[in-house]
Image (cartoon, rainbow, N blue to C red):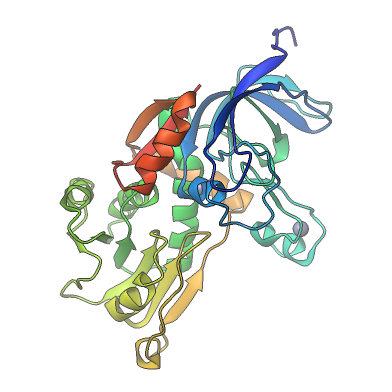
Length: 334
Ligand SMILES: [Zn+2]
Ligand SMILES: [Zn+2]
């Protein structure tokens, strides 16, 4: 390839637990066998990035560059990789799996014993360039520009995996109406299902946003709509919502926890789980989830709502996410 690649790049680096991220100059990595070097066009800011910055996930290999909702263009390929220079590729959270452990051999590579994760155990997309294993990248649908495609790569994908676990029920509760819920709500409406949006008590702006995206009901998370729900998905990392959601679902209803980290779940009486209600979590993604969801999103007419920040404003974007002051998703554009 003929494109000139600079020696150095700007990156927002996490150097110790609690952050903040620091702007640093880093060498631009060169792709080894099976790898692709991407110039980052946009990188979404996910709640998991907050858990990384806050040191709430185990074994963070400092210093690390966060960011796992990456849209980039191919600038160089290692041996064995045949991607077109300039092609747009998406890099998700799942960055590498072993292919040989029990889970990899049984269609659950999301649970791989030796998995590596973009922006957590592998350097991520809060930078001008990113190295990725080409086997875990997805082509980005043409219908989206880079900033609007970025949130699809985690908020969209994880929401889709949660939905698969939630089943075919008609009435779906979404707890926490941020980046993931605003995408999933549009998929549900397209499927002809009903969305019940639960927000922080008093967050009328988020409730109005949910209604604009087709929610049939939107209200405070401590309230219950008149009808019992068929299933509920929790995107907010708040353990107290687990018993609230169990109380809101019907007999045999499913409650899915979509986050990687959550505050402790308060004890609750067995009777709210009884009658075959199911409580489960969802972890990471498989490449199958990614290909299925990225094919479905443009078909369902999913539009992402984004707020764009400069790369250097990563700390500001994270604080806006933490305080619930975002409508839709924050995206960094280097
Ligand atoms: Zn494995
Ligand atoms: Zn994420």
